[in-house]
Image 1: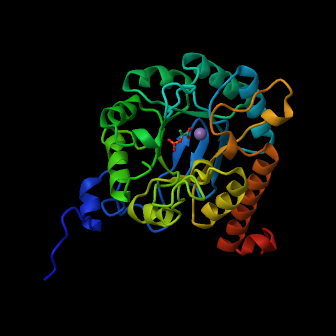
Image 2 (image 1 turned 180 degrees about the vertical axis):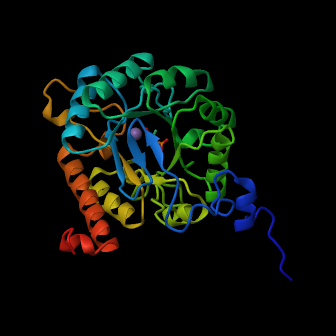
Length: 308
Ligand code: PEP
Ligand code: MN
């Protein structure tokens, strides 16, 4: 007898839970093609991965501007940085708030790189939307449904991180909340999940298997955050390359320059996983080389020149 276990989710159930973003209900997206999300001129889902980089948190104007300039020089496409930080302890640095948003806007305007930042609170969606080019919904907020509804209504592109214990179905269900408000400008982000080994040798477990699974179920782009997933700077480059090999549409990476600024302090947030701009430059180079290789392999005539 073909009996279903309570709570078990089939592919048909998935399409019923998230019909607006499901590939099954949108045959206009053929295999290998998807919806392109545009963020102030940067496009996700084109086949050319997008690299987003910056500090975990905005701590000072000097720090943010320095990191932004170095990230730009390394070839990144977009900036990141938290003005409102979800911290385990209320006694830890919570972010600069509005001041942080203003610094982010200034860093974005200076470099010409669009900026993504987290919105933690449903009451702040409007404010964050005034300063950011893209709203980030963090892992801890993925199932904050009122926040998803409000972010969807803002009309801003949204970076939806996977809840650290979320199934694919729950994650796509969260994206459906955004899409249900008429906002299809959604980029999904795998950032590591909690397993029984979490914290033993890595911060979380980077679930690269989910990247092709997301592509199979939805036409939305999906990127990978190797920084929070590993929690260790020395593994970020390798994890980034692996993510690209798995078909990721981009990367979200934490970068710091504090060790070269005599006036800077060690980052208050996620210092161990922040990479240097030099490592970021190597990652960007890898991403661009892969892009070119794919272009040539999809059209061998390009190798021969235009007259052939
Ligand atoms: C972040 O990217 O700043 C962050 C807090 O990540 P996550 O929500 O994945 O923990
Ligand atoms: Mn962080």
